[in-house]
Each structure stands twice: as C-alpha cells, then as structure tokens.
Image 1 (cartoon, helix red, strand yellow):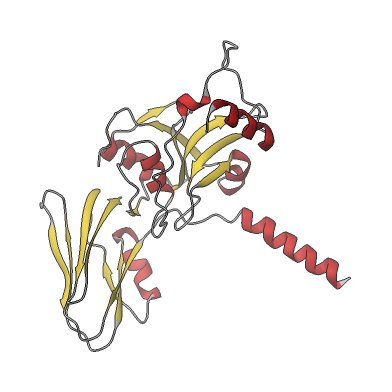
Image 2 (cartoon, chains in turn yellow, red; image 1 turned 180 degrees about the horizontal axis):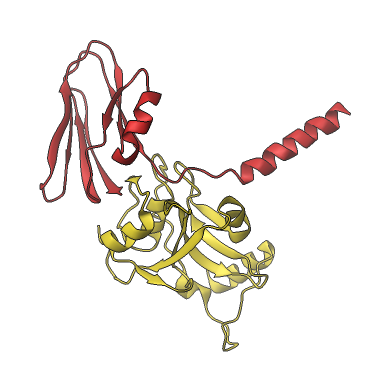
Length: 157
Length: 115
C-alpha cells in the first residue's frame, strides 16, 4: 500500500493522521510493520508470539508456552528495553495487580481523538488484527501498561 | 414483542463478545497417541543442553497426552479425566524443539517457553 492508498484508507476508516510536535507530517510507511509473514495457521499462536515477531525479536511466529511473566521475560530473554512512553512499533504489555501479563500488542499510532491503535493477536488461536485503546481499556481496566522496544537489528531466535 | 426481545439478546451477545477477554497464555500442549504403534516424543534445546524423552511406548487404544506448564500444573491437572497428564518439562525460558515420531509419521515443532 503506497502513501496515497494509505491516506485514502485512513480517510475511509475515519482515522486522522496526527502531526508530530513540530507540526510537520511524517510518512507512516517509514514505520510500516512487516505483516505478510504472520503465521496463517494460528493454531497455538497467541498475542505474545505475534508481538515478538512483529517487533523483530523472533524470526518467525512460533507457539509460545507460558508467559505469565512475559513483560519481565521479554527484557531478560530477548533484550527488550523499557520506555516511558509508546513509540510506533513499541511492544506494549498489560499487567494485572499481581504482576501477571494478561496481554501484549504492538503500538501503531494515536488518532487525533486520543484513540490508540495496536496490532496483534487478541488471544490464543486468533487472527492478527487491529485493536484499539477503547477496547483494551474495557478489557484491562487499571492495568499497568509497559512500553518496550527491541533495540537489535537481528532476531534473537 | 418477541422479535424485539430476540434482537436485544442478539445485540447484547454481539456487544459482549467484543469485550470478552481471552486468556493470553497457552498453558498446555496436546499430543495424540495412536493405538498399537510405537510412539516417541522427545524435547531438546538447540544447543542440546537439555534433551528428554517424554514418552516412548505402545498403548492399546488411542490416547491424548496433555503437557501442562509447571506454574499451574498442580492446580490444572485434575481438570483432565480422560487424558494422560504430565508436567511440561521446561523450567527455564528459551527456544526448544518437540520431536514426535511413530512408524507412520514424524515432525519437529519449534517452540518458545517463557516463565
């Protein structure tokens, strides 16, 4: 999808592209995520597998068992770095008050109305799709959100 | 009147389905064992620092084996009445391979375990 097609698509979806703080526009395609290699067989694939693949930490989507401490393990095992705020392409996780990571996705963009858009699998055995902060704030109210970036150019595994 | 109630129920169900939180974790791995065929399941790390034979046997009727990750093994195992239930053998995070073979088929599956 080129820039014109993307602009047309966002207009149809009712999404207004934000300007950066300097007031100049940016080319969203610079931040486009490679999505064509997400596993079409979603058996045993979950939000963690899609997030790790989309951020470049693993070379292919593969089944991930466990992940109760996913937020910490992403840092320990893959070398993710914690950030204070979301950047395009950041891994975002939601932890409950017992510290268990309930969900993860990839931050894509914030609309002018403040709605955030994420890409990933909503859960195990789900297709890769777009989720919004309107949806996740209902599913994970008062959850701790953590923003992580993968600083390497090659997948860990 | 009934049509309105039906439509309200459908609308509520659709709305509710949009907000049902799915469990994030995949906590078990299922393997089907055919009857009367020697079946072997092994697990190993890429560097071979861990290598286990998880199952090597012939059983008279087809059976399902469930491997449950260890943080919840003891609390979940009683939920399975008709399967062989075993603890998932990984306790350290990282990549591993599951190899399944019998006289008819063989495959290797690459997976990641995270605590």
